[in-house]
Length: 281
Image 1 (cartoon, rainbow, N blue to C red):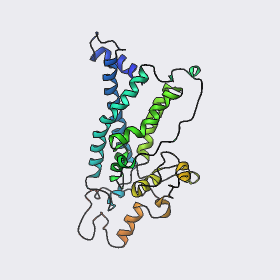
Image 2: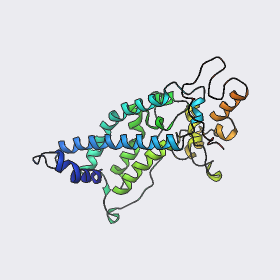
Image 3: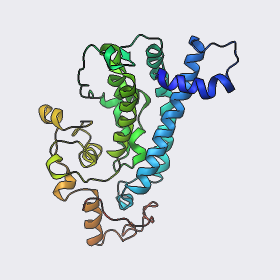
Image 4: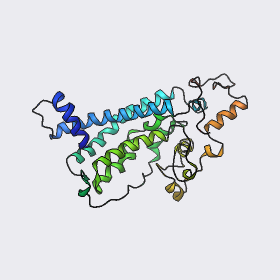
């Protein structure tokens, strides 16, 4: 994180924000700067990636599903934007120790003494993870809508790793961005995965079942640990039983109109968006 902090100091913070009496390596200044940079960065990544995914990838037909909540997108964004600043507090504490030189992050490859692949994300305590499952039919904006403790602990292995093993600083930042992109992608309703990878990659199709059934498909990237732990479930989408299949069935049975209105007169207020091509096909 010192790479980001150095850029912020050079172009913005030193010339325009802090008085000259506050040295760049001062602990208080670094903590304040990290809080600002971390929160701005998280907001830009979340809202930017979420907006792009929501408008260009997410299948808006999913908003017709009976379990899609009223005002869900706004609620997802509000929950995430409330949690992110809280999550940033312990995260910045770890960033601060990294900046002060207590981690094994390095600038040049020759400084590395060993390379070890990052481990699988550990399973969260269900009590703190349940709020994330309010969104049975998630949108990209649900990607960061976690309980603050859940959100911090999910990212903890990523932050702990460089304190235990050497890691290039650029790769560390690249992984941070990649994790955010991936997190948005598995909530985007685009269930397409190349055939040979369907059994291996834990994509949006697998993660949708995690939201629907809670105790299956915990994996972040791959299905290996779910298979070992007995929590793997073949995605409903791949069996013709996914959310879009449910919508088509209800429409065919006359229980839902084309615009998402149920036959009892209740209308999903989000269902009036323009239809998009199904991502299941």
